[in-house]
Image (tube, rainbow, N blue to C red; front, side, top):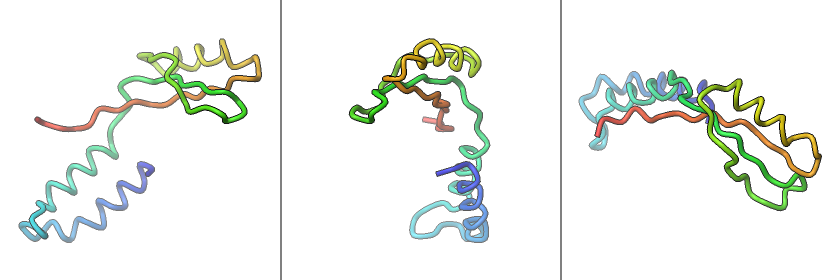
Length: 97
């Protein structure tokens, strides 16, 4: 699900937030939670790699504090051709407990 999908979902739920709860769910809190997730920024970036033929799952290579360092690390082993890599942003969930 993309950030724009979350925002669209929150906007569709917003009219329901006027009700105190819907089937036991606090709709105003649900709307606010979805918006927090959609507006979040990455806290780190992960480089993952796998065999280029797709015969393996993505595996963690390393985590980095900046996107630039993750991308520069990705380039170090992306050249051989038998390994492919990707940079994945990591987010924290806005949970309070």
